[in-house]
Image 1 (tube, rainbow, N blue to C red):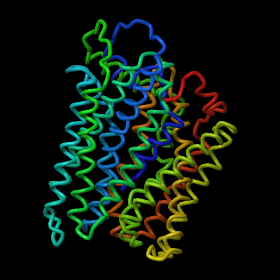
Image 2: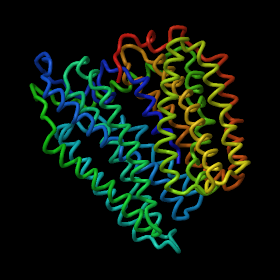
Image 3: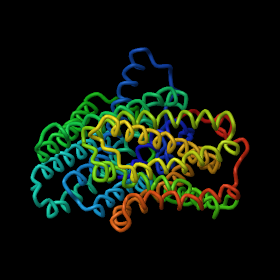
Image 4: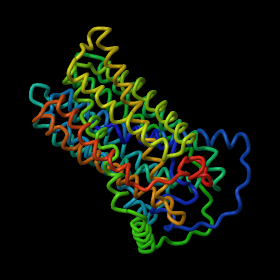
Length: 472
C-alpha cells in the first residue's frame, strides 16, 4: 500500500494550502452574509477546539482504515501481490474530491452532510468487518471482490466526508484569523487518528490466532468509532448562523474552476513544471507502494510489529522529517535547499534495497532493530522530499486562484502514487522486491535532471514566498 496520502497530509500541515479563500469548489458556490466575528469566550474557544479535533479525527480515521488497514488485510489473508497493489487505487477519490465538492451545496447544509456521511462511513466499515469475518481463510479469493467493492464505496464516501468537514470548518469559524487559530487542533485531531488507526486498529488485528476474528474486531471498532463520532457531531456541533443564503450557482462554480485550471496552465515553462510535479517523488512512490507487502511477505514482519513500525516509528520520523525540511527551506530558500534534500530523499532508497538484499530476521532483536531503523530513516528522508514538493506547489499558485491552484497541483502530485502504486504488485511479481526497489532509484534520476531546468524562485522559502497567508 502507498502510504504517501497519509504522509503528505501530515506534511501539508507544515506547508499548507493558502487559507484566504475557501477550498476549490466551495468558494464560488455559496455566499453568506454574516456580522463581523467577535472574539470567542474561553468556554466557546474550548468547545470549538474540541469539535475541531473530533471532526478532523473523523476525517483521518477512514483514510487509515481504507488504505492502511485495507492493504494489511489483503496481505494477511493471502491475496496476490497484484491484488495488493490495486489497493493503491483506493486513494484516487481523495485526489479528485474537489471535482464533486460543489454538489454538496445543492442539498442541505454542511453540518447535515458531515453527520450523514460519517454515519454512512461507519456503516460501510461495519459491513467490511462482517465480510472479513465471513472470509474462509483456506480459500479467501472468491470473497475478495465483494470486500474490494465495499472499500471502493468507502473511499468515495470518506473523501466526500473530507469535503464536508473542510467546508463546515470554514462556515462555522468566521474570519481568517479565527480559522488560523485552530489550525493546530486540525492537525492534532488528524495525527491522533493516524496514530490511533495504525497502532490501535492494526494492533487489534493481531490479538489472537483467529484472523477472521481479529479483522472483525479491527474493522468493527473502527466502524463503531465513526458512528460514535457521527452521533456526537449530530448532537454537539454548532449550527452556523445562516444569514442570507444565496442559492448556489453550480454552473458558475465549474466555470470558475475551469478558469482557475486554465490560468494554472499559463505559467512559465508549464510542461516542465507539470513533468517535475509528476516525477519528483516517483522513486519514493515506487518504494512505498509495496511497502506493507514487502515488510510482511518479504521479511516476515508480524502485524503487531507492523503497527509499531508504522504507528510510532513511521509517524514520528515523518513529522520530524517534515519539520527539518521546513526549517531547512525557511533558512536557505527553495533554490539552495532543493538539491541536498532531493539527494537525501532519493539515495535513501538504497536503504530499502539493502533490506531486500540482507533480509534481517524480525524475530530477533537485532533484525527487528535493523528493520525499524531503515524504516524510520527512509520515512524521514521521504518527508524531506515531500517538504520540497509542497513548498514548490505553493510557488506555482497565482494570487487570484491560490486554493484552486494548490488543489490542482496536489492532485497532479499524487497521480504517480496511484498509477505506479496500483501496478506495483504486478511489477514485483515479475522482478521481485530487490529489483523493484532498484528500479525505484533508477526512475528517480530523470526527475533529478529536471532540477537544472525547472523554474525556481529565490524567495520560495515558506516565510517569504507565502508570507501573507496564515497556516492551514
